[in-house]
Image (cartoon, rainbow, N blue to C red; front, side):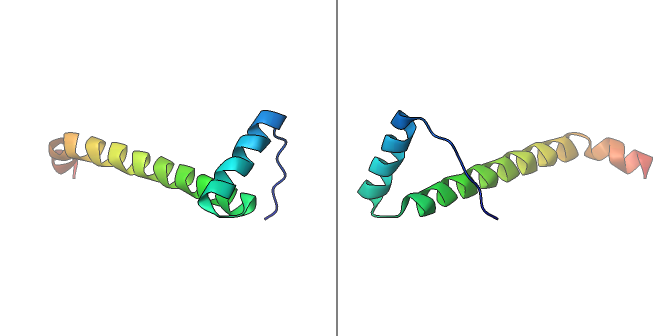
Length: 64
């Protein structure tokens, strides 16, 4: 999938600076940032789901 983003001048400069500092391409840095964001969302969901399942475990047993 190809994704085009419009960044303002300050955002683009900052992205280039960070990529240069980490010695990676701007494209690779952007992909890594997206991957981190998606992994965090999955992790948050999994924690919330586990908390709900644990909290309601007794109720689920009685309903089964």
